Image 1: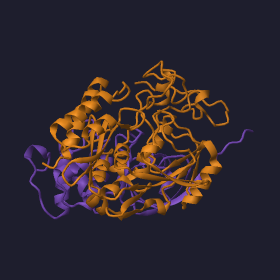
Image 2 (image 1 turned 45 degrees about the horizontal axis):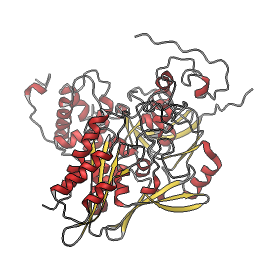
Image 3 (image 1 turned 180 degrees about the vertical axis):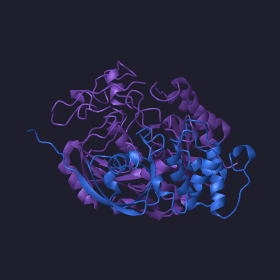
Image 4 (image 1 turned 90 degrees about the vertical axis):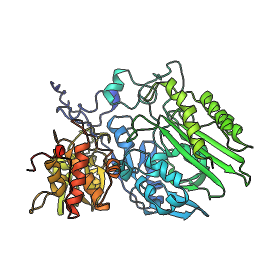
Length: 361
Length: 176
């Protein structure tokens, strides 16, 4: 294999940008054997209020980082190019888990996924949360990645999660540097996929998140955090810091998360099914939440399936009706691993399995 | 002259048990700092995106992918690379058993496997095969497979507990 010699830098100002050509080779004049991070300013606050102030100072070019397992690959591929990166990794207040199943649990956004998986109270009272977190990525990446980072994971797409040269080769897509969606070229909307495992589960559980900025703080439901657009995928202003997530007290509900991926060892979900059922004394379903992840730009609540489950015991006919409703509602596009028709068919099977896991008998 | 930031940052941290100081461009990853500024080539540069695990190091005893950690984040912390595994007394038991069982073929993935396995054995001296598989699932070997690697970890775990483990004869090269 012959390595191509990159052109020498021509006395530029060093602030290479995507618009001015290949950002990897331009400033270096060496063989392009490594994808490196672009230059940025790095700040490390110790308090939430300092983080909020630094972000206000940085303006639209600022970006929070926690574990870096989503942001840094994206920066290496020039999908995200912040000028100021503010690390929340050393803010002690973000690194706590408080409460229990009776009071509800508050999980700091900076808690690592490993610590979430191993936390005794979470395992005892919210085993479905620990189990879902264990399906995220690998042990090494869970040491680095955080709860907050998973909830705010950038949407993913086969035409977006590629290096700069690849994306340039297709003349870019509308999510970064281009103006067309290669999955649906006549669409005015970006269809990059919500691909985090905790997201559908937190929405199904009715968790709430606290957002902090210099303007103040507010609490919103997890459901209210997500927007069905691959580019503008959060109802969160960029200057708002996700501080923590609150799980509701245990009072008779049960929940489960099931995930479809190619390799069980290590992959993003191409379908996630999260269900919460509130059961009455007589064993009938009083309320149901059924959320599909990994198939659309936002977690998808399937109201028809929820309606099919409420008011009766969880029997095979109800489960089949709910699974059918999810099959109809799931409309994945051809922008992740696996062919889309098969992913659509799997919705029926994974919803059935998730609901079977919640049956008593 | 256009404005240009050329400043290097200067940090101190503990590397393989020794205090080190190093100066580097502040946007460099720990992988780049280890290989390019400290000339420690044991930590390998693989996928660069957190998918392959060969650049794994231990930061304060916990595994992390050095390609996704800023060098700045090492400040005040303790970093261990594969160069720190052997001691004057000899190789680490994991290094010995990787050699004994033929668990390395081209060897490019080996440093990452060794450090993640070391982290596993520090927390769990008697892991089951399933626990070893789970712990190592983020480290990819493209040469041959994982059986010999699992066997090497099992053998090292036994030796570190002061036991000897009988491996399938076909798994062991050159022990006689």
